[in-house]
Length: 124
Image (cartoon, rainbow, N blue to C red; front, side, top):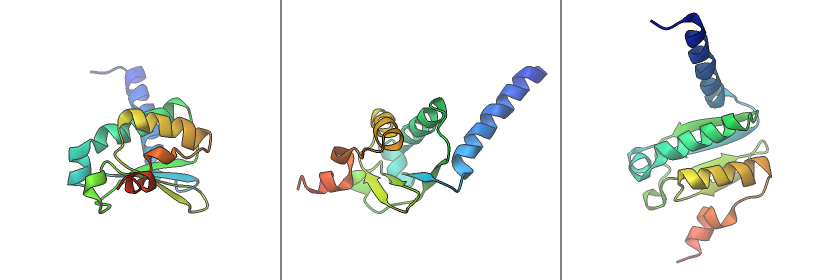
């Protein structure tokens, strides 16, 4: 059996995780978690976003998952939508890239252009 202090800590961590997924204001981080995304590594990417945002105690950021985005060859795909509705789509994401996106894009407001769908499509 867990002590009251341990249960309180579990409750606190769970509520933090829920708040990362339910905040409707501010910036949104949307991770493609369809079968193709999961197979390509979307779970560690989503976890990295949630951990970085939590670690940095960032507010007004929603992290949640969506189904198929429609570009399986580019998975894992992450959309970041700011409070004005501007969308940036990151492709072929990894946990390391997610940490970088949190620092550069979310914290400092600088899009990581070379990780976006536009940069990937221009390679063709």
